[in-house]
Length: 130
Image 1 (cartoon, rainbow, N blue to C red):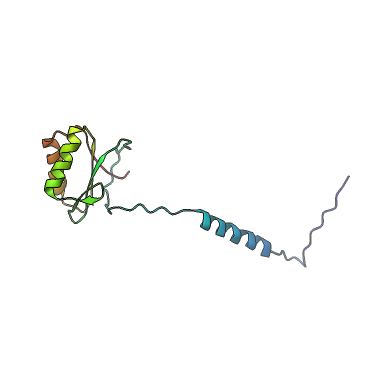
Image 2: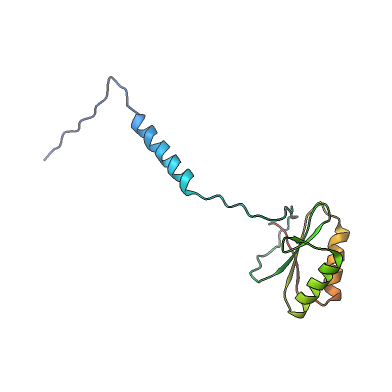
């Protein structure tokens, strides 16, 4: 049995209005259903490294901004509070992650590293981007 095809073209014109409607509906659908997650926190531009790896443990995060401000778990801390929090982390054998901005002074990161070594933190990590 043969079916006849009926193509409705008006002198070589193809009506693309339904196609445009479908494209706009898909665009609206994806715009409304997608969620944009912005992570709150301290803006730190990490240096790049080729040999970095992903850590999956619960870490104490020490962030050093480009203005050499020190934060622990997104809270600004003084020197004394930094020492006490690192002491607690060393006692609990909690790994430590240093996130130093590439614009920060190397001296500030070394200062935090020295505190960690004095308090005998067993695992000190430095955050980088791949």
